[in-house]
Length: 382
Picture 1 (tube, rainbow, N blue to C red):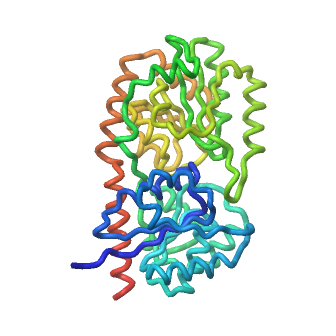
Picture 2 (spheres, one colour):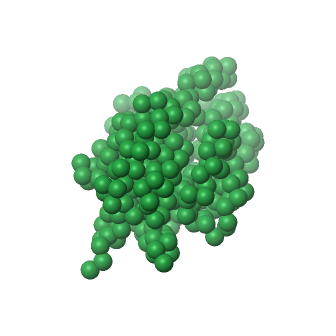
């Protein structure tokens, strides 16, 4: 019987971000007969790992002591050798660069990079580091076709070096639920309609577009609230306190404070989706948006901007709406359309649940990833 392939996924931290969640779900759902998957976090900030039953044996922490701590590379290479790793896969900037260098040092046959977004701005030091180490990776796995295209155009790797694996969603955790008690707990009144926005406070998520649209809605109707779920980011390359303060100032200037419920990060987010009548994803850029998949799995329609693969992930007029990036008028109009049409909203929600069950299950995502690991290892060992 063939032994499982030994995989090490390296990531900056295991906080409540989208990439972090996908890494944990990959570890939980990958076929253990095919892959023995370990995770190494470069931070001891690992709250999302609590749900992983194998964390005692398979989770490793190599904590960075400074922003540019080169000793991490040597520690990571030693871990790879100790675990007899055959494939290393890096997620997010510092983890990806460290895993490329450590993988080379440890003579790992397969070193895989990632692309989790599209059309975003790379800092000079990031772009330089990625270009300097691009020859070390054997493959780049993007979570969107748009992300693969963007990475290819930026770093000029051959097209054959890219694979696309869209994110998956836990349809058992995220599903329609009765949340009347939570609604009362949060002071949401009977008949109040809820517009949800889920995402960390970072510029990419583009909260201002939603609030600009909400100000237009407020001039036409009163019976709605905006539920904002997400926190500022303290770990990683770009803390977001300044952006958070800017968003709060906009809310104040638009006189929307009484319309907003800021919940911060929630461990019971699967319940919170079900408080919403619709969710909005006004992002400047995306990969595969986890929050859209989670909302749809919960039976809640999504309105999202036309970026990356959103049109593919969120079929327009079937499970929600796709709107032009930057157009607050059309966003306000689409929100009003769904809030006013109960039957259409219900139909969209039912379609959304069915859509993700068919196309975006975690098992499907994990199987695709395992197949890439196996085929890439076989190719490199020839």
